[in-house]
Length: 172
Image 1 (cartoon, helix red, strand yellow):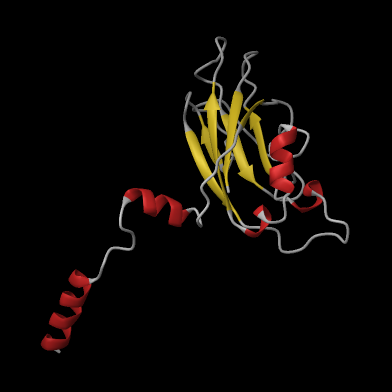
Image 2 (cartoon, rainbow, N blue to C red):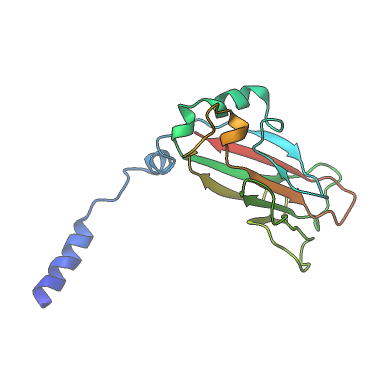
């Protein structure tokens, strides 16, 4: 038993690292995806909006997102809270992956308030979170991007009259 334990320890020490460099690790983690795009959108305060909807994205990115070749890979998407000159440190942005409709409705409260219920809760400028979205497994007989994509719901807390913005950066 001691010999088996010693062999196990030695084999664990001799095992090669999973990646040769940090750059390789990033590419492999992203599923060999190496291109990013992005856009910024204003956050509503009354009800969440799907920040991956074709009506929110720039048209050139919708074309890439709807490309079925891209839809076979996981998508790694980073959401970053950005501010303008009127930003408020107490204003939060909440982000949640799915479901297909915003039910139950996403709730987002000001910083340090009760009722916070987002998948990501971004309270400071440049705070961010990353979500990995699997490719669609089923799609209607006439597939379109809006029928097949996985929605990401986002909204601002609405505790002030100031605007909050969200930068959306997908990798594929």
